[in-house]
Length: 531
Image (tube, rainbow, N blue to C red):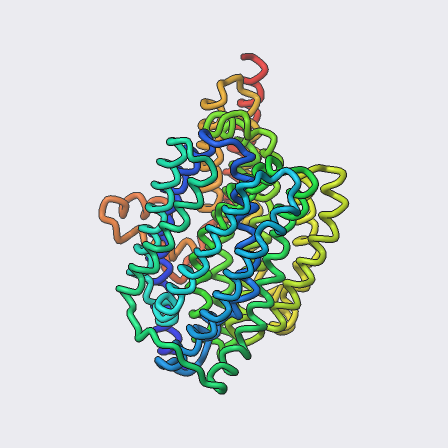
């Protein structure tokens, strides 16, 4: 790929990321408000029941997807109407088979959970029809994603979240229990499928061509196998924990996982852009490696700050926002937040491998992680209860991380990860500052908010001081465009060009800042002993 072509693709990817990030801010605001209301209204066992029913449907869906959409997105050549129609035909055949199987086998599947109430059977059957809604939106969505056109797609997904959260909250407040989630899920599916087809219409036809199907499945099946083995690790919660401990433990663990891994929602949005982005530049492995490093830098910063906030202020914030009934899940919440950084690295590497046509290799890596997670989780759940699942996940990610990079070329891991070691400094500094505030005798709300503010301030300041010059220059180039911020930026980041050509006295700044942090910690702990 020529340099100009690569730059053009990079610009399209940046635009897509900006659109999805704006969308993600709106989505997270809506999800957070809805999640708080639902968590305060419903019991953990209700969450667990919905997770079990959703899991049973999603598990069947994974085996019938065949990676049709990623196969068409990744393809180097242009896709035609015939390709889409063949993929649609294959998808509808498998979806119909899966829906029939779920309806027939639902009583037997639910019987695996001794504490599941009888209504779970109809929950599974109702959710089975959401598979049709998902498949109907796929063909329109993949065309937009392949062309990196995320403007309308982003806002459609915002609308889907509004429909889901709004209906779920209203129905929960009306006392509909777990059916609040089911009805909201189906309504979201109808809304999304209808709207996205209106934005990206295509001739809905059933068609089949042996060669076209072969090309689609050649990439799609290995890709989907990777998705299956990746998701099998998540089945530990509804299968192992649900069977051994019950729906309440599933509710605790699912809540801890969804909140502890919250930064991965951002990663998911960005990786949707990264996959077609890497696919377009797959022939230039040096450019792929450079973009991997940039993706990781920007994604690990929020992952680090999320972990420190939950580590220091998590217990106070949970007691205040979600009520003390969720406190038993705080240790799992913190563990999941810690593993997020490793998850980010594995996710970026796996997406780049899939985009470069190494789907089989990525699937093998995912299978090793999944098997390791299951093997470790079995004994740990017995000894540690539901907290054994995140402990097993942490150990798995640490042990298998070096192997994740194999296949991308000699020295790739070192070239990608060593420049990111500076991110450990903001985590340590903000963690120390947050710990210093925990000794203050304040109410849960006051302690949680004060600790969070201290962590955010110290983390942001440390990043500003310790970050590499190219990142400072990139931030400065964005902020300098805002007239009111320009004088402030000139004082904080003086003379740093976008390429980081000017080198400030970085080590001296870090030393001075470290001294100030030490003074702050000593004062906080001294104040705590006096109150």
